[in-house]
Length: 292
Image (tube, rainbow, N blue to C red; front, side, top):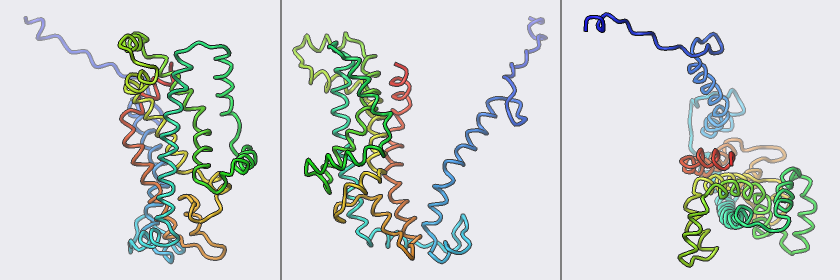
């Protein structure tokens, strides 16, 4: 007993030395995380600060913390230039794009993951190869196609283009996730008389919520922020989306900087909400879908 009391505890092992003169690597990672957070959040915080400043203050010596904050920019941004109507157009367009993309990508990914048919790999990788084509090169062919289909200057036509742009990545991502679901679950469902659609809806979809959340998050961000396609395809002001509406604040001679930054903050809020809500499943969805 006496020997046990006199024994000295060994010091805890110290990890490898970090960077910037910091002895512990975990503290180095903390410093790097803080720096990256400041770099990414800096422009957003500065935009938020400018949204509460008047045009005279913005054109003068701008500061990070407004000396005379005002909310008139938000009132002006929402009431002028049909900003509320543009917001509603973008919301309807984005929700429709997300729903259609998730449904079609789930069915296609299930077919690629579960069924064996002729030229399956060739079709899948040919479909995936479209990701290597810059979207700008497709503007003129897409414009001519929408003109032939009589879908120019239409939100419906824009939904079709957004869905086609998001399907390759969504199918690729979901295929890897679906392939990791044990086939025994599906066989048990089919023994109970479930059809293929019921298997996808009642079994695969509930087990793939993390992957579906990731696909929905990326699709929402793309459709909400997309500008070149909307600017090319839409010509009627009543059909304009939010990114085009923000451009109305920038004139040839004068620019309403205060309402412009206020409108930018309003346009950022839905994306931030979607990211925060889907963050619960995003980590596991990205890791599982990307590794399989």
